[in-house]
Structures are given as structure tokens and as C-alpha cells.
Length: 230
Length: 230
Image (tube, rainbow over all chains, first blue to last red; front, side):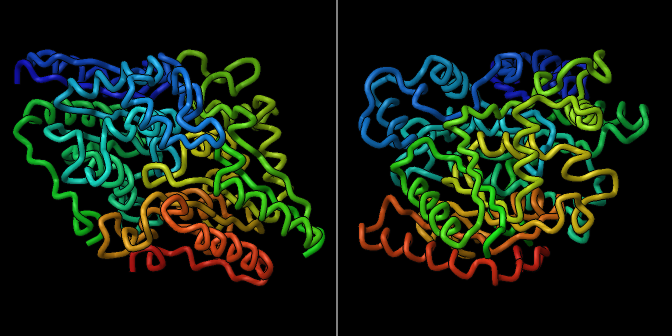
């Protein structure tokens, strides 16, 4: 799929990690396909996860009582968001596909990646009054959550102590991506890479390469409650 | 319940906000009851949400490939975690009740609070090898998630576009608190305080005060998949 643009938002501290290998594979395979790949390496960028007044350049809409949602919305409209946010929004705007690559931390993404969501996907840019879900502002884009877990697959099953892994995907896939109008491809999950054999790890890396080869032919999941909780 | 110790972990930028009012009420009411109340005001503390090498003082267990989980576990055991983490852990250790007060951001807690979870609740301190869930290391403690939403209550119902609010609680209550052995009281949710009348807002604040008066008589929820997904 030559010409397609991909943004990989990557949240791991160590290039030699399994997440680092998954990132490398995605960059290489997608580049080989002729895609243009951009990586936001959040730890390397020392990306700021805190949503604060610093995200607004210049005056506040209401300096009496700081409301982050209102202030970033107003700042977006007048072009007054901080430089780091504007740069990330540009990358999102240009992308056909967003890949989020991270280790699952506490049934969720690491704080640095949650901060990217909190700060980049502001009202006016990603959604607006009555422009959400299928009407969200980031339509015609795809997303894919690719992550590793600490626990094994049996732990994240319906009868397992962690419950169905799809329960964990609801806030990320439905609550964020679907909310912004972004379509969601099936997640890519590598279970417990730290606790399996070197051979199994290699198999997992190969599986990711293989999946990427036909990624552009995939249909998005039906991002409805039934998919998550049936 | 004189003598009980409460830690409130608070994540809002603005003291004049509705979350700020909920915090103030909790501090006042619990203090009036004779509880000793500590507040971790994360934005005011400029709490660091990023999980990095800076959290480990001195040498790394494996400087060749940085693994945050392994490094913080090893550092915990030798007393080598950074000062801000040790201080938060001390507050958690002493507390009988943890209250998390925050605005829901993207179906989840704000990044700064997620960072508190990521960095404070390290292996060895909050859980350990086969010491998780009912065997977690933070037993005999209670927790309570108190938060505000942007959307109205009808949005967060089973048939609503946001789905049952309990779906959102699974990663926080089960995946974090229950995992660490902490018991979970029913969440306290104020729906869309920014979009209701001043009268309704006052009612919500009064309801919080009232609930706090009998909080210590409450039984924890049954933190099982049935509670969340039935």
C-alpha cells in the first residue's frame, strides 16, 4: 500500500525490549510496503503527560477558574495550543493509520501514552459538540492497539482472573478511538513475552510481520458493546 | 471513625473546580469525624507520571536493557526507589482508606493519576509473585473512586453510547485496586456537573457529604466480573 501514511505512537523506555522489536518490525515492514512511517517515541521525546495550563499559549479564556477542556478547545480554535501538541496533531491529521505500541500497565496503557491521548485529542480537533463516535472528526483513519502483557493468555480469558482481554480494550478502542471517529482494527496482543522461550518470542515477532503484510486488507472490527462483552 | 487514616489522591488543576469542591468536602467531613486526612494533590505537586530510569536511585540491576518492572522491584527491595515514590508509598501504607478524586478523561483517569498508579504500586510493595488479588500486599485497606464525567448519566447506561459506567471501572477497580488486595467501595460518580443547574450541583455536593457520614459502615462491593458485566 504504497503512499499510505502511518503514525506509530510508541511507549517503551528500552529499544532492546520486546516492544522495541515490535516497533522495529512495523517500521521496516511498512516502509518496505512503500508506506511513509512516522514514530512518536514518547519516552525518547520526554513527552509531557500532564494536562496543564502550559498547553495553552498566551491568554486564557477564563483565568478565574482553569478548565482544561474549555481552554484547550478555545486555544485550538485560535491556534494557541503549545508547539508539542500542534506537532502531534499534524502527525495524526496526516496519518491513514495510527498504531499504538506499548506494554500493558495496570490493565491499561502507560501514563505517558494516556497523556498523549489526553493532550493531543482535544475538542475541535478530534471531536466536537455532537461530532463524536461515528460522527467524530478523525474519520477515514484506522487505529490498531499493539501491546504486550505481563500475564499469560489464560489469565485474560472470560473465566480467568483478569477477565476477557476485550474488557480492557473498551476504554481505549471504544472510549477514545471510536469516540473520535477512528476505525479500529483487531488488537495485536503478545502475551507474556518475558515468560516464554526464545523460540516462542521469535514466533510472536514473525506473526507480527506476517500480519502487517496483509494489514491493509483487514476490515475494522464492529466496535459495539457486543464485540467487547458478549 | 476517629483515628482512621485516609489518603486522598487528587487530580484536578483547579481548586475552584467541582472536583476541588468534592475534595474540600471530603477533607472537612472526614476530619470532623476524627480521621487523619492526607492529600496528594498531584498537579500541585507536579507529580511525575512517566515511568523512567529516574525512579531508581543508584545502580541498575541490568543496565544493558532497562526493564521498569524488574528495576523498580529490585530497587524496592534494596530501598533504592526515588524519594517521591517512597513518600507516596508511606502514605499508602499508613492509610486505611484511599480515595481517588478526579475528572474522567477518555473513559479513564487522567494521565497524572495513572502515572501515580504506574509508579507507586510497584512489585514487592503492592503485590508480588503469586501475591495478587485477594492475596495482594495492600490488604485491610479500602479504596473509593470518586469522579466527575463530561457526559450525562443516560450516556453511561447499558443501552447508552458510552456503555455501562461499570465497564470503565473494571480496569481501575479490579485491575489495580483488587489486584493489590485493596477492597473497593462503591464508586461515587457525579455526572456532568458542568452541564447541570447550580441547584443540582449543590445537591450533588450534599449527597457526597451525606455519603461520607456513613462511609465506614459500608460493605465493599463484590469485585467480581458479575458486578461489572452482568
